[in-house]
Length: 484
Ligand SMILES: Nc1ncnc2c1ncn2[C@@H]1O[C@H](COP(=O)(O)OP(=O)(O)OP(=O)(O)O)[C@@H](O)[C@H]1O
Ligand SMILES: [Mg+2]
Image (cartoon, rainbow, N blue to C red; front, side, top):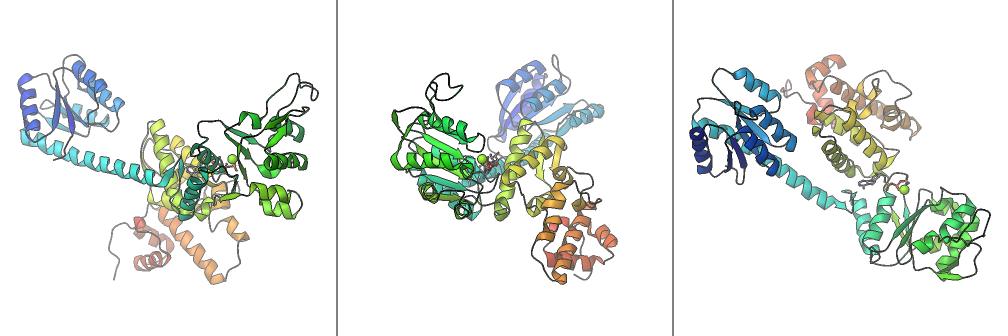
């Protein structure tokens, strides 16, 4: 028996209703009784129930209306319908609309309790699963940054430490790795959190406009400067200034920025008044700044001023542990928004997610999962083809096409691999063999019997290869291997 299962019972026959309430309460369920469909629908809108048991034939709103209201309010609410003897078709119709089970009148109270017990077990599991997910997310999340990988845990620890100080932070990482999230987290956890966080992309503006944008300008400072304007440094006073794509700064602006960092003072463009800058600076770039310094494109003195605390956000391909944590978080958020009842990723889809190299990093993963949820099925699991979104994906066994960026560019063993380190023929053959076996097994929905036939192998030989290459058991179709 599950503690705290809340049940709404809708039946217009008082005697029947009373006996059911008694039977359910006697075993400890929490029961709310309603004598008509309308009363039942109202109760659904006022409270949240784990389970609704409703007679189908009711005065006012009928049982199907109660079922619909329950599912609309919360798709997780289970509904059991009660039908009169001989109207099983109606019950089947109700199940198509989302009821989990039905009871045919007359029934014994034991039958009712058995069905309710079964639903209670599923509800318990669902709750445990949700709790576990919440705990995992709590454990792996910090200010919206999910990270289970040890290097990412290190990044998050460093953010917590550095946030408390006023030191300048330089965030380095490829595009889409989460640099802006890191900058947000530094500000949100700093003593300046109640003051503004001002963001400027140094790549978005030409040199002269960027200078005015950062430091402001006086009226008449240049053509078009019709009035005095405060710059981002002033707007960020007592707060944080996030300078994104700092590697794009022109030499002139680099000099001006260096002065602000040295003297904590600046003047507006065209102005003489010196303004104090009480600003915490956070910068980010995808560029290798040391290389920029070596090649004379970035001032060395400025580099040292900016590089007080360095936070390196690793590319997603180097933190595999984060892939599924992020993917599942996005899947939950998106399916919630789109009201889809998706169960997660199928094992081959998970494998695909883990094998991809994500040149666009987390941004690409987020977009990929959002697209899969939006365009895929309403319920069930996300399949590899939902992620790829490309009919002739070679990974899925179709005809290789140039235009399938996901497969031909990103997957290990795909086009990119050809540019990678040169290996022996035996090693190359193994990579191909593993990929090909996985793709065949996926196309035959994991059946090793069919897969073995296509590959021209015995089931045992296929089993041995799967074991050798670590191709996971979800591909197993449950039959024993010959001789194994
Ligand atoms: N660790 C993470 N957990 C959850 N979401 C993340 C994580 N890292 C990045 N994202 C998401 O990925 C997307 C890209 O992140 P962000 O804009 O911070 O990257 P960036 O490094 O600043 O990219 P760019 O260099 O292109 O500006 C955003 O939607 C962000 O919410
Ligand atoms: Mg960014």
